[in-house]
Amino acid sequence: MKYEIIKEQVAREVFSAIERGGMYGVGGANPYEAAVAAMFHSVAERQPFDVSLKELAGKAHNVVMAWDVRMVGKLRDLFPGFFPKSLSKGKLVAEYDEAGDWVVFVV
Image: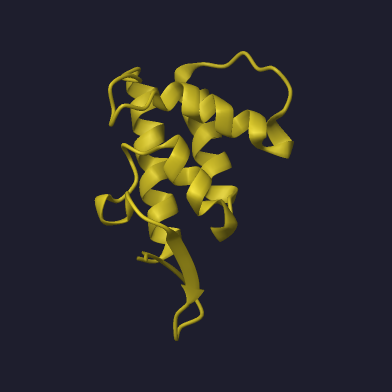
């Protein structure tokens, strides 16, 4: 599966979950805490913030979308309930396809 598709899917789900305020019980993960952890691990988002759920959702979406393919494992660790089921278990491997896009698969 193309990495950009995975990343967009996870970012969209995180945004929706935070915006709805439905932040618990998604695949055993807490997307709110995961989003906050993702933001604090981002160099650009290290300072404290006071924002609405919609703003937090937007920030979380932007942080996830800024991650490159090297973060695919972290993306799965932080958001297991939003990660594609076909890639949810096993060792993740990424390589370029013929079009020059990163493709992620499990071995």
